[in-house]
Length: 424
Ligand SMILES: Cc1cc2nc3c(=O)[nH]c(=O)nc-3n(C[C@H](O)[C@H](O)[C@H](O)COP(=O)(O)OP(=O)(O)OC[C@H]3O[C@@H](n4cnc5c(N)ncnc54)[C@H](O)[C@@H]3O)c2cc1C
Image (cartoon, helix red, strand yellow):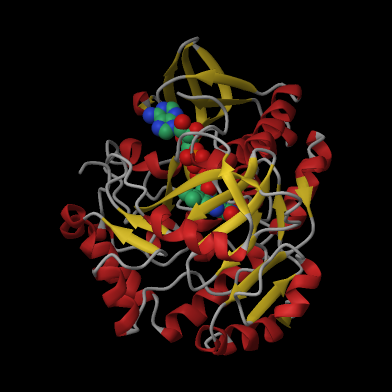
């Protein structure tokens, strides 16, 4: 049996950032994963560091949008019918959190954390020699119709209040930024303070390498072996048991597998999403991520090609992939951009771990000494990984957290509202 100051369970972008921040504070840390560093959800995302986020995605109140989703005609959202009864309590809580006054409150609560997102990545990238992955070229969102653009007024008002810059553009203005876009849209919004990365896996691996260079140890093991022994937490690894006074659960969509065993029930569901890489035709290219807002997909230039990512699919985490959204998305994407052949044969599936109020849980596990949670980062795990890592490390080290952790406490939930989205 070996002993460290802290164990971090899960080596996605969140757990790796937590481990690195702890190591930077001089703690001895074991980072434990059953797979390779950064290879799960943190591998396949759209690569955007969304420091500009104001409103999280909301439940649609518009009857037309709901009907399109219900009849599976929407490309931005899909579902497995058999999963609906299981996820219904979560959907109702999500709907309630999407009411205008609640979502405006969420925007206010999350701003301090999101406003640090790009700077916290930049600090870790400088430390880890990963700055070459960073593109500080903003994010472009295009709107094909007037209605969806007009609906952005409340977001623009809050952006002005928060001092968050944006630029509204017509087709020609957007094409000045991205000359390869075809004029199939009427409006665009450029968010200059968002950033993106050309290889999310490369970023997480670079942070892990820096962690190891600081003396951190990366071990293969199953987090489900976590248990209390005396005053410590113990996890079994391929190198034997590791004990530590502090343990951080950063298992993304798999957190319920461990927390459920401890009797900690939190309303974590998954919004599954897919990606596929394409080559660009001829000399077409992109300098930044582009969201085709009404159609509901993203195009991001990556080292592997143009990565197309889909919106949400409500299905059991471990259910077989059903990437049907692509058949609707790809013809529309080809209208906007000269997409060539797929760069590889297979479609990637990942699961965004989501709480219904769209805020992660970052902080102590109520009722368990030395147990910490860094989970539920939904659409923003890449964005918030380093900021989360810093916040948790500051709390564990007894420092003043850089922003108020109260909005992220686990005990904000009614403990009975749990959803287990693991089985179909
Ligand atoms: C299609 C899509 C697009 C997205 N786009 C963006 C974006 O542009 N920007 C953004 O900020 N976010 C985006 N996200 C969200 C982001 O990818 C996630 O929020 C983030 O990756 C979650 O990170 P994590 O470290 O919490 O989880 P993960 O990366 O899933 O890490 C969890 C780790 O736990 C390990 N694990 C699980 N079970 C066990 C076990 N029993 N024992 C040991 N280890 C275990 C896994 O192997 C894994 O490595 C997107 C997500 C999807 C699906």
